[in-house]
Length: 560
Image (tube, helix red, strand yellow):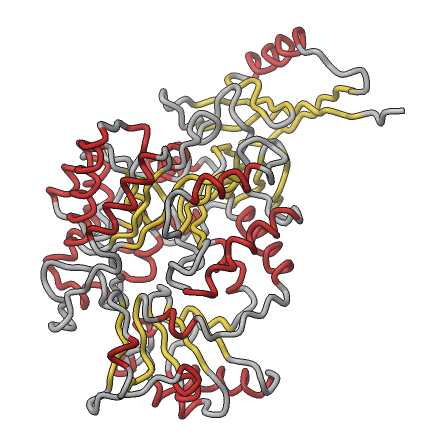
């Protein structure tokens, strides 16, 4: 005896719908059956479309069909939001560790560390995340803590503090002893693509940048307690933000910012998928040393798919340079606040070229982290050479992740080569108060130039880099539209912002044929907003609320 299966057709009406398709269509009703959109348009045409669809639909003998109608009372429907670049493993793990994002001075940091020291078991490490010293209340305290600072706060157990951007960390003397790092061996242990900061006497001062952070992170004991609950929390949070698909950066070997510890990320993500703990679709970009491994990894993820294209490998992730926060982004001119530093490439040009070319030849996408103006010029040149040598077109979709500081020539050349810029609007929310101090008034005009990118014809794509920034798409919209008055001439409209987090993001992930816009036959991924998104103001606050999020026709979030 087979169980009777009920299949519901949902009609949403009395609403405004922005399809974000090629025609920028606007509709007033939409019908969904199972996981697909079967009709969209006027209410009358949708009802007729439903009847027409089921005139030819062959139902299973054990299937009963039901009609569910939802009067949305003037609400607004848009495609499900797509975050094209985040770090799911870190996002989940961070939920289990000490959050320092709200620390505003050294005294608060000391109090939090002392409380954590009191609450933890004697053998445990303190691992604090997301410290943003540039936002400290007292300008004289706006420096990243070193071992002397941390020793005064907690000297009896290992303490590791990771900065907001994840590219710089600091430790106390206990950790330096565990690593076995001192003045006699610091030069030998310093990686080419990282720094171990020294004091005036040549001793390690406890601060590590870029690849050197792996020396520390390799030693941090991995505690997987609470990861399932953390994964549920992350997936629910993403749903509350209207996110239905993500581009996930994961590490599958010892190559990567997290070193040996990062090699566990790939295993962790697969385990969480097997346990059905992730609601969203994911396209993964893997930090790995040998592109040929992508084929095997791709097959392993395909075996996890209970639905088509739920979890797939999109390509490889390469690290180019560093960050503004750590003063390691690769610049033509030195940092304004640090004249001795102009950044550096974490991966050399020859290695990037070799990995990128081999990846493209295998048919996978190439994504490369690049923030500084000199780094972005270098990456565009590498992509150009590979595209010309292999005679590639748009199908390979070369991506630059962040593309933060851009010269006019780089934007122009990227447009010619169909290179995609995957940017993080919420970086503006975190950096607008201090970034001019890093770059000066002239260069600041070329940071996150969204208006110039779109006007040049480059595909601009939205992302969060979570957990570096909040994955809230509404916060990202505000950054796009208002920019906190930071270089306001680079503002874009709300409808342009919507497109970079929907259709253009799907395009960047290679999934524009099945999602990213609301069209017949595409997946029923959509968000219901309480107001018409095109009629609200983002000037003072986000005067907009997410009422519901649907993923493949299934309700995964509903506001109270």
